[in-house]
Length: 97
Image 1: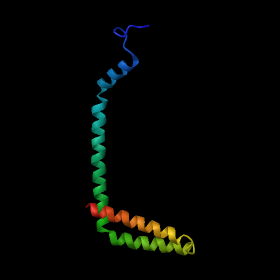
Image 2 (image 1 turned 60 degrees about the horizontal axis):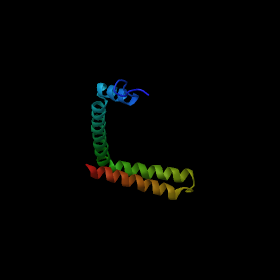
Image 3 (image 1 turned 180 degrees about the vertical axis):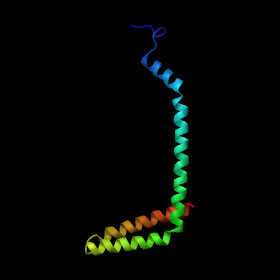
Image 4 (image 1 turned 45 degrees about the vertical axis):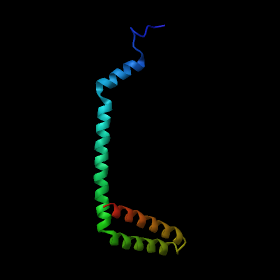
């Protein structure tokens, strides 16, 4: 058996290397940068949703009508459900502003 005071374990060696590379600090900085970018993107999307809500509603109606027409209304319930989900999502984004 080896003496732990003279031969560091693999775990000890890895911890030492991680400390030397400052990975915890670098990871925290990367997480902060990603969070800042996501908030900025969400702000941009919510602004777009608020400004173009009527256009989005018209597009949804047109797309839904096209799908209904092409499928002879076979999926009308699903189309209506998806349209409602998208409208709720757009409303949520718009209200975030």
